[in-house]
Image 1 (tube, one colour):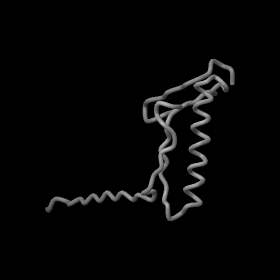
Image 2 (tube, one colour; image 1 turned 60 degrees about the horizontal axis):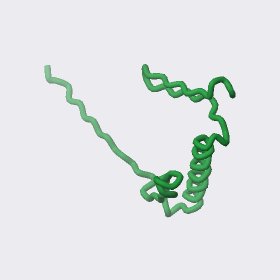
Image 3 (cartoon, rainbow, N blue to C red; image 1 turned 45 degrees about the vertical axis):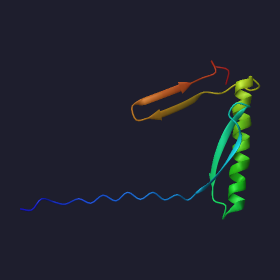
Image 4 (tube, helix red, strand yellow; image 1 turned 90 degrees about the vertical axis):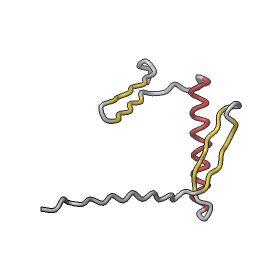
Length: 87
């Protein structure tokens, strides 16, 4: 009896080959956004979302807003971050 043969093919498809970095790491943080310049409308939406997320992160750091409970689970690891019941 012949041994079975297995073939594994891993394909990486990069649908967002271009990127833009917003901000400076030492001056309020930087966000790198990946997109496709052949679809500028979608890329512009991603940039707008990046600015909004950067502002949200800065507001958390400044204490302007209080973060709510965030739960992240990956396999057997669970991380819970809470603002102490001030949701």
